[in-house]
Structures are given as C-alpha cells and as structure tokens.
Length: 192
Image (cartoon, rainbow, N blue to C red; front, side, top):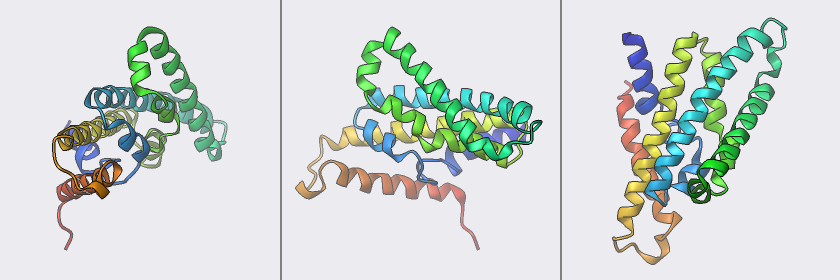
C-alpha cells in the first residue's frame, strides 16, 4: 500500500507533468485564464488519462504483445486516445453545452496533449502492473489538475495587480509558471 501512495504523491507533485516535465503547456496556458474552466479541464484531462490508461494497458498486454507488434504502441495509443476524446467531446457537446463553449478548442487539444499520451507510454515503459498503472494515471491527472488550478488562481489574482504593460498577458503568465515550476522542483530534493 505504501508503494501506491508514494507513486501517487510522486505523480502529483514530484513528477508533475506540467511543472517538472513541461508537457501539456498548450492547455495549461490557454485554459488557465479562468478558474472555473480550469477546474473542469483538470477533471476532463484526469478522466481521459485514467480511462485511456485502462484501455492502453489492455490493448498493449492483450493485443500488441501476443501479436508481437509492440512497435505499433505509439500509433495505437494515439488512435485510442483520439477516439476516446472524440467520444467525450460529443457527450459534453450534447449534455453540457455551457462547459463545451467554455473549453472551446481546448477540448479537442486533449487528444493531442502529450500528457495524455505520455502517461500510458510511461506505464508500459516502467512495466507497471495494472494497479500501478491506474495509480500513476490518477496521480498524473490530479497533478495536471493541481497545476492548472493553481495557475488559474494566480492569473485571476494578477488581474487585480498592476502588471507592467510589456508583461501583461502571456508574459506574466510565463513568469508565474516559472515560479510554480521552481516550487515543484523543490519537492524533488537536492542531489549531492
């Protein structure tokens, strides 16, 4: 049980894909202008990562490995994730139109988000069991959600601050993201 807890915390904080590996930055900067949209996007990305990891584990271990076509892993995972995100987009457009309008183009960017593809690939590369794959996927999704919610909170606070004219918009967002990244790097400890 301790291994699973460490894996989860490591995926959320120490190995945060956005703030320590710098993956998924397009959605991170695009959606983090609005806290409400960021919370929803964090939940959507977490769900997609988690469910994609379940499907990816099954496809890899029960189809690609027995057929000796593991060289197709990346292509198959991309198709799997794109199909799942397309299905999610249709469901959200139909049943949650306000959320669909809020996310806009960023919903489709989940399909091409490198975090969503990286997690199942890392699970396979690390030879994780099914349970560890799920814990890592959930932790990675929660880590993405934490990062985007923190960034959105800070960007909303910055609207009340006097930001120098040349730094308004993405300029100050990059600076804030750099400080967030440094704080998350602090969790990894010092290497002698």
